[in-house]
Length: 279
Picture 1 (cartoon, rainbow, N blue to C red):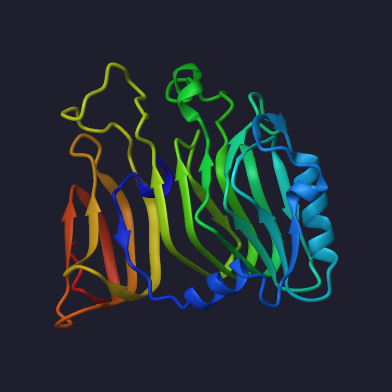
Picture 2: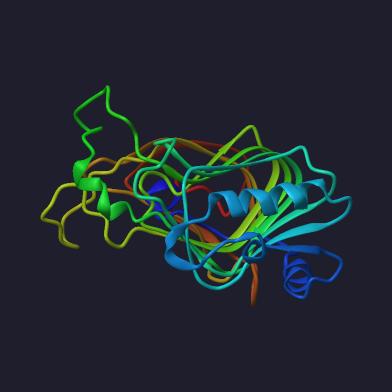
C-alpha cells in the first residue's frame, strides 16, 4: 500500500548515521520521554495526551529537543504534532505505535505540521492494523465513503530527515507529504503483508491496486545493487502518469554502472537520468 505498492526502490545518499548516534545517546539533545508524561506501553491505554504534552514541552525548548518513545506498544488516537518550534526537533521512536479502534479524525492518524528542522527515526514501528478495517471499507465502489487513515502525514515540514522507521499494514497510504521542502528519506520499510482487498487472495493473483500520478524529482545517492531503480507494477492495472526527473544514482561498491528495471509502467522521464530511464 501507499508508497511501496509499486515496489519502487530508490536508494538515497544520506548522512544520518552521526545524527542517529547523537540522538540515541542524547548528545546535545534535551530528551522528553513520553513515559514521564504518563504514557503507558501496555498495548491498551490510549496515550495521545501524554505524547502531545511531551511534544509541546520539547517544541518550546530553546535548543535541540527529542521526544523519546521507549520500547513498548503504545495506542494513539489521531494526533497532530505542530510547530512552530524553538529549535531542531527529533521524534525518536523505539517502540510500536498502534491506532485507537475508532480514530477521532477518520483519515488521519499521526501528523507532523509546520516544523523547520525535523528528524524521525529510531527503528520503531507504525502498525496501522489496517487488516481490521479493509474488509469494511467500500471506497472502491462508494464515492461518498470515508477514506481510511494515512499512517504518517508530513505537512509543511522543512529540512527534515526520516530514517530507520517501519510502517506495516497501513489503513490507507503509509506516508503522505504535502507542502514539504528538503525532505531526506532513507532506510524505510513499508509493507502490508496482510493486505487482501478482494478475498480470497493468493500470491499468484495480480494486484488490482493502481499507482498513478507520482513524480520522482531530484533523487540522488547510491545503490547497493546494479539495479538502482525498480518500478514493478501490476499487469492488471499498470502504473500510469509516472514521472522521473533528474535522477542521479551511483553504485555504492565496485564499478559505477547502474541500470533501471520497469514492468507495467506508463510514464515519462526528462532531465538527467542515471541510470538511463526504462521508459
